[in-house]
Length: 205
Image 1 (cartoon, one colour):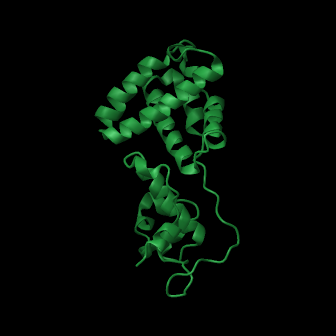
Image 2 (image 1 turned 135 degrees about the horizontal axis):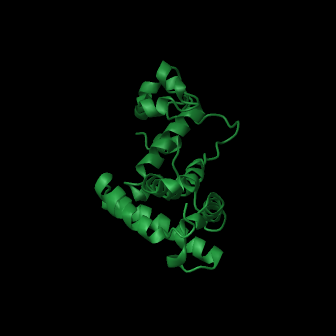
Image 3 (image 1 turned 90 degrees about the vertical axis):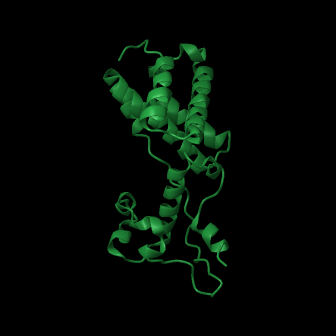
C-alpha cells in the first residue's frame, strides 16, 4: 500500500460509485454514512494533528477506529446501537477500499475484523409477565418474524429458530437488536432509540 494514498479520492469514489450507483442507497443511508465517516475523519485529524485533507488511508488503522468507537461510547455517551451503526458505515467504506485498491487490502481487512458489539443482557432477573400473567419469554420461531430468515437462523444463539424450538431470552433479544441494526441505515430514527423485546411487550393491546 502506498503510504501517501490519500482518503479524498477513495471517499469520493465510495459515495459516487459504491453507495449511489452500485448500492442504489437512499438519501437517508447516504446521509447517515457520510455523517459517520465525517466524525471519524475529524477524530483522526484531531488525534494525529493533521488537516483532514492531509489524512492518508493508513492513518485510519484498526487502533484508530477502535479509539473512535471508544470515544463514541465513553465521551459522547452513544448507546451500543449507535456505535454499531457508525461501525457499519466505516466498514462499508473499507469494503470499497479493499475492492478499489488491492494494495490496501491489509489495512482494510484489519478494520473489517472489528466486531459488532453486543448490548449488555440483563442477568438472572425473572422474566417479565404479560397482561395475562404468564411469563413473556420462550416464544417459538414462528412468533418472531425475523427468526426464519436464513442469515439470522445461523447466528450463534439463534439456531433454535431453524429447529422450531423455543427461543431463549438471549435469542429473542439478539434477533430484535440485529434486525434493528440492519434497519438503521434506512431508518436513522432508530439510532438513538433503546431496542429490546420489552418495547413490543409494552406495545401489546
